Every structure is written in C-alpha cells, then in structure tokens.
Length: 404
Picture 1 (cartoon, one colour):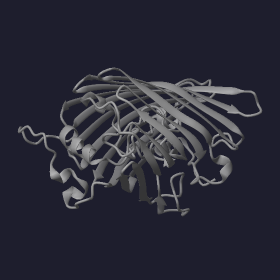
Picture 2 (cartoon, rainbow, N blue to C red; picture 1 turned 90 degrees about the horizontal axis):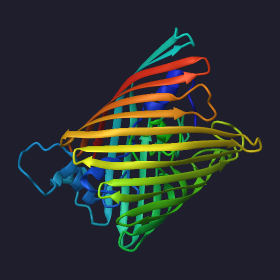
Picture 3 (cartoon, rainbow, N blue to C red; picture 1 turned 60 degrees about the vertical axis):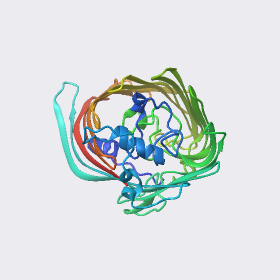
C-alpha cells in the first residue's frame, strides 16, 4: 500500500496536525449572507479555486481595510497574479502556497497519572504548493490542481518517490444544470460531507476521512442548489492514486443543507463505503459516517459552526459493529475586519474503544492583512485516553498562506 503511516504518539500527532488548511473553505461566510459556495468557488460545494466574484469578495469582506474610506469595488490587485495577467472570462487560475512552523510536545502518563515518557518536535512543514485551474465555457465546467510536496508518496501523489512527489488533489469535469441550479460531474473530488472547513486535521474530518487535504475520491456526483436547499450525492469509485486496489473504498457520500432562517443552515450527511482491505483493519470492511451540522451567523461579526457524526465500522464476516463518534464546535469572532479569533472544542471516540473519549481544545488567531495573504496561529491541547493511561499533546502551528 502506498499510503505510509508513522509510528509513535508524537509522530502520529504530527501526522495529524501538520497541514490544517489545504484550500480556502470558510463556512462562516454565512455571516455575510453567503449560504452557498458556488458563487465564490469553482467547486459549487466549496473550497479551492475562487471565481472572479470570489476574489472580489475576498478583498472586500475578508481582507483588513487599511483605509477608513468606504469602497464597493475590489482592488484590481485582488485578481490572479495581482492583476498583472488579463485572463479570459472562461478561465480561472490560482496558486496557493501554505507552510508553517510546528512546535509540539507529547506526554504519556500511566493510570496513576505518573509521567512515563515525553517527546518534542519542531519543524517547518510544507503543506500546499498547488497550481489550480478552472474552466467555464457555456455550461461546461472543469477544475483541477497540480502541485509538489517534498515528502514520500501519499494518497494524493501521482508519482511514487521516497521524496519530492507531484500531487493532484482534485480534477473533474461536468455540465451545469440550468442557471447555476446544479451540476453533474465526474473525476477526483472532495467528498460531499459535513462542514467543508480548513481544519482538516480536526477529528471530525480525519475520523470520518472527509478532509480536503488528501481524502478526495474518484467518482460521479449530482449537485442541486436552490435558494433555501442545496445538496450533493456522490457515487464513490475509489481513490485510484492509492495502491493496491484492495484498499480503495467504494460506496456513496452526500449531504443536504436547508436554510431554516436567513443566517441559519442545518445540514445532514451520510457516507457508506466498502473496501476489501480497510486501512485500519486489513480485512474486508464496511465503514459508515452519519451526522448533522449547523452554520449560524449570529451577528455580522460572530458565527458558530458545529458538527456531530456517528462513526461505524464492521469487519465483514464477523457480525461485530464497532461504533465511534466525533464532534466539532467552533466560534468565529471578527472584532475588526480581517482578524479572526476562533476557539474550538472537539471530541472523538474511536471505533469500539472502551478507554474513554478524546478531548481537544483549539484557539486560533487568523489574520488576512491583504487579499493574497493569510497569517494564522493554531494552539491546540489534546487529551487522548489509552488502554493504560493517557497521552496529552500541546502544540502550536504558525502558518503563512500566500494565494496568487
């Protein structure tokens, strides 16, 4: 299998936390009256490449205003390449680089609370270096990414080197139904499930395997988007960048979200897949995730995001169904335009684990000084019970994200 997994508690922590945010996806934009994603993103379910309108709103609504002058026109420098390139209306381009300095410390204690071992790690992490492109020609739609990472081959790699690999997170083509009323498409896509948030290392994303960093799958989907209801259902054909075939999951994933008030959206999601060899079991496995989500623009400066999922796993032939769960609750407070304070709380109960529930706390400071730049600090504390004792992890990730 081409997807390698490191060992040891700290390495597992690092593997889970090194890349929070592979693409722009901000569900809290509901605070500004944007319930859907298709108007700002080429992918109508959100994340990734921005449309011209999305770039304009990024400049007008997300970037810090350095002048007291009110303006309704985005700066020309908000366009691709700071506006130095005159792209045709049917072509969208973008380049994203995200990297960060990770500092983490992990402590393992026994049942009596006595410290057994500690481990520390400090490193610069390359997260994203992707070129993105999109097409809108009549009702034809297409989008794709190509990038590079200096690490061993993984589930998003198209090369198989021990280091320095070409990666392709997504590429798809489709046909629009009516005037942005829906889309039929096929290719490698983000799974339609839950909140499409950038904190893809949150347990709600990693445990359900629905993150936007490396959990994309090949398949076909139908997306329908109305003023108050939107949803997408995808037939999952497997990740053909993952080898051998026995590890590829096949099934479906989908979500349905309803605007129950002008700034309140309630959603439900469901995912069922089967693999001949489960990534964590090594035997024929049926995996499920079912949950609900909330996006609430409480005030123009304050938003709430929440998701709760039930996780199910069955080793086929055993008759045993292992149950787990994950939750995510996050507040987004924007005291001044462009600067966000985002506390979050998460829980995770692993499949069939009787040792207890893992708890996580985040505090994030996220600043968009200009439309092409994001500076972010994530401070996290995670407490994970073990069969005998517990592991406590404390760390910080200082990120820079440049978007051209």
